Length: 58
Image (spheres, helix red, strand yellow):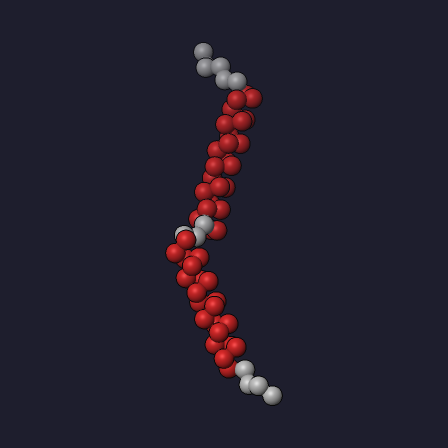
């Protein structure tokens, strides 16, 4: 005789597993370390400074 399973619990477990996998994918796609963020900010600031320094006054 086969084991009985609660279909509601099986459905909820499958939904949670799917949500965990989607969260892991999003962390890999969007997650950045503090060092990455500060490096990007520094590069952006440097680019803005170089652009401002290159402007000529009329």
